[in-house]
Image (cartoon, rainbow, N blue to C red; front, side, top):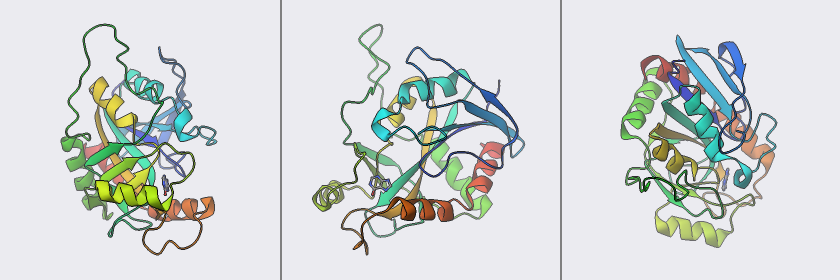
Length: 248
Ligand code: HPA
C-alpha cells in the first residue's frame, strides 16, 4: 500500500478525526505487538496511517511503549515518512505552553529501553545520527505549517527523559545547561530506531506546560492542564497534516 505519511500520536492525540474511509489494520512484528491497530485512511487526498503511541486508551507509559514494534508496523504498512507528535514541557523562552515546535536536535537521557534493531547479528548498525531528524522532512513540515497557517517554531533541542514521573527543578536546570529547549519522555529511542529502519522521521512537539522551575511554573503540573493545552495547540494540526500528506 502507498502510505504518503505515517503519524504517531502522543499524549492527548489518540486519533486523527479528519481521516476519512478509515480501515483498521492489526500488525504483528518480530519485536512483539505495536501499541494498537493502525488506522489507515484518506487525508489531504493521500493515504495516511495513524498510530496512538500510548494506545488508544493511553494504557502504556513512555517506558513501556514498544517503539521497535510501532515503527516496524508502520513500515510494514508501507510508511516511509513518519511525523511523530510528542507532547512535551517547555524549558527555554519561546517554547511556552501551546507552542508547536519542530526540533532539530535531541539528547537521550532514557535508560533500559530497547533502543536498537541490531542485537549483534548481521552487519553492524552504527547509523549516522548527527542530524537525528530528517532535514528534508523537517523542511516539508515547516512548509506545510506555513501553507496551513499554523505557527511552528523551527528548531530546538529535545531532551528525552525516562519518566513516567516529571522531572525535578534540578534535572530541568541540568537539561537547560545541556542546551535542551524541550523535555519529553517519548522522543527516544523512537527517533534512533526510525533512522535504523531508514525511515524519514521528524517530530512535531506540542508544548503542554512549562517544565519544572521554568517560565511562570509555580503551580503543580496537572494532567488536566497538559490535556487542555494539547487540545488548544492541536487546533491546526489536521490542516497541517493534510497539507503535509498532500505535498509531502
Ligand atoms: N516533562 C517531561 N515530559 C513531559 C512534560 C514535562 O514537563 N510535559 C509533557 N510531557
